[in-house]
Length: 240
Image 1 (tube, rainbow, N blue to C red):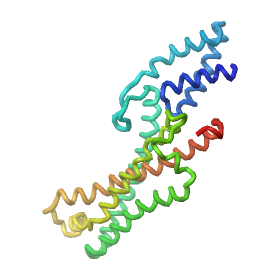
Image 2: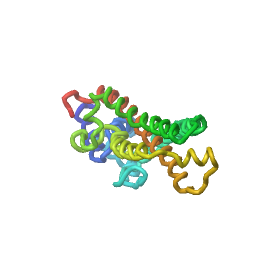
Image 3: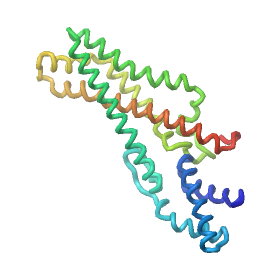
Image 4: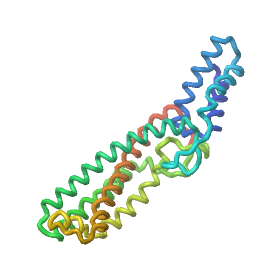
């Protein structure tokens, strides 16, 4: 296959608006398929490519994935993203449960609301400091976490890039949590006080949810970084 023919396949996939990491995965499959059709059916490139596009047609139809996308995306993107995001969500949830367990231990070992409030705030402060330290130590990645920084002005570099905006939402939410005392959860477990059930639930569940979201962001960031490094081997260094 000539460089011009490969470029034609790339252009077709760019038109489908695939994130760049998924684009390269699909491109490899399409090239193999085109070559196989050329060999088996004795067709030239144009006819083999046309036949391949027909075979992939259903994968490029637009569909909704409301959990993460506000606009329609190709079916193939949804399939890949859903599988990988679900794996990250499972890891985030499990690590969030660990943090929740630590919170319960802090309640158990605290001898007053004041002591627990200090522990409560310290634990949640870590969930602000951790992503800030990660981003500071990876400052060279700063342009790749912007939603408007796209390949050829059209494509996200990775499927994880769109989730980088979670940090602002998470840190703002966590700052609000830190400003509270967290005493209702403490009083519930220490004294059995059930007079403020809504506040008890918020005090226990909201930090868990935000902590889980921050963990989700961090795993996304490291997957994003790993993918960017891998993509740099396939991209022209001058392209940005």
